[in-house]
Length: 343
Image (cartoon, rainbow, N blue to C red; front, side):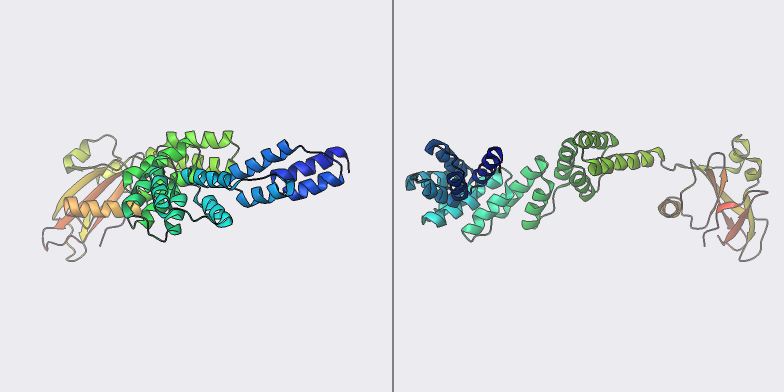
């Protein structure tokens, strides 16, 4: 093994906290490390929260590590909300953590939107975190674009996240290239993001070479664009006379009208009503919407729709004068109804 590879291996051991292995290898390979270099690594372990590795390394290197230094780092971990590291360190050196201080640290973690350290703190003292603190934490998480942490905080508080906070979170996620949580936040709020913000998100993902997330954002943007291109359906009541005067209505539909009462076979006497549609409804939800609107707004459950122009529609409905039935067939000279008579 070359000297370069040996040095690389020793450095790898030191960086991973395996100081004993690094020292043993250096002695075999006759590579010298100064006490100062080893001491720097030991304090690096302490900064990382690796108390056990720091203690083991100090013993292997023959470098003293005073107890007051370890206590100082425990307090540092607590101040930084690194509850797990503080707890592990306290077990190793045999010093219990102050209960009141842990609760204060847990509260401070929640106020800063650090959900997991806050939960760890309260778990350590075997207490349930207060609901109001969880709600504050959830709100802060959403503002910072931490969707899943915010959602978990509200879930633990047994509360539903406010719609406005979800939107703020979604926007923050999109502006930082987090497509999936952004979409989930908007979906939970039952809202639709703008195509512009989705495109921004997609571009960020592309720059960062996160292709799948970029594709997801751009596809969502295209879907929104497609939906917006479909204008809402406008309904306008119109008279028979007005139908005849409209140039855009095909000649066949100008004869569109009641043919026969399906209950009494009357074919002559009817009370007619007609409506113009800005466009014909698509099958499925739009048809259901039209049925509901005609019933609730105009009191009509039986009607037919004829097509003319660029997918525009003419609704016809009639009441039989003889028997009062609305079960009336509609016909036109050449054009078939788009929707069969509703029954």
